[in-house]
Length: 251
Length: 337
Image (cartoon, rainbow over all chains, first blue to last red; front, side, top):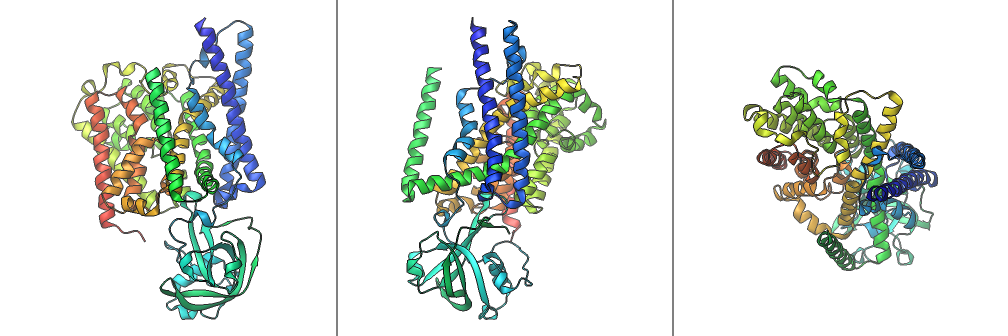
């Protein structure tokens, strides 16, 4: 009596496991197809998500095959010893399904201004290579901070034109006419994300909302910002733009 | 059973209370916090899942096709050489910390020297190609990658040699070492006892089925660890983290405790470590990445099924002290720019 009950529980569990694995495989495929995957990891490692999708679906197929086989055995009235192992408690199954639940129910969003913990950094950390051959108007926020870290005197960059995209980040102590045009850098996945940015002087700052994506054009000047003399972008134009397809910069 | 269930409920309620208090404490919109938390959690999970899957499939294949005799045959006869080889055996047989215990237990019954088995036991979870790849993806080819492998080899060989000089197998192993190991996933144990080699198709089928089960066994630790890391990054203020993470000794102890408690599989722990890089010392990150794969709650439970209690204590304390010393030494003597 007890063994049939057990068998039934196992069968249902195998079914649920198979569904979870299948769901995770579909979730990874959907993530890649929708482009959401770059909200989570560096684009360099997206190929790993293909690997994950294939393996999830393979394991799901194997589970489905075992289900069908055990169903057939049951019809024949034979117990299946091979299924004995792998039984686990329902909370464990629920836990493994958490990524699937969060991934499908919570709308996918990249990290933005409200995810900044501490400060938006004005400098890049770590030894990075600086490519001075990128023309000034093609440099992104990260390229500029690299240039700043390499020049001996900030006055060397004063007067250089810039054209960068980022999200608006504001703190009360920035002053009326100032904000930062910020980006997150991601080396591996968002676990290592850090916020970097360039201070901007713009008379229309008060009309901007935190987290708005903007394109800022202007020229660098060296000015006081939060008690430090740093390159500050004096904007000639700030326009609202769509969030870029790749929200993060990759160092 | 009902007491256990009650304690689960109480733990769950307590955790929920802490989380709610922390969310309210940040003073931000709850929806925004949930969004940020989810992005961080899924970031770790999406980056880690392919490595966890590869690990489970490879371990399924090994369980299906490699017998303990195969491994025993590969071992050098000289005990010191064999101990050194034990540190690198994982590159030929990539098993993680949960897969390694039953393999070692089986090897001991084949007459493998104690020192070699202990070294293999401690080294294999890190010294293998999958961990090499995941650590490279997370940290690049830098000091963390090199440090992780060098420290693991040093500690594993060191502890192995201690056992070479002190103790014969009879004094160290449990008489019941042939019984299924208590506390771990029970399905991996009897497979090695099945002597005849399986035909290819049946073996592949079994490998996939075991991989599927193991994904759930291991996945729960990955999910728990990722939830915790994401919650910490989202809810705990940077000041608190820095206070814990900047002390050259405290930071190492905190990371060792985390590694022990989280029990995250060695194939994916590098991605959790990323969450601590900004606020914790490099020595402590290395301690997390070396001590955790050798000793954590789930491997400790499995050790208890193979070794005498006294020996399990050594197997925990020796790696603990060695990685602590190395971590603190790194913090005090090496500066990473």
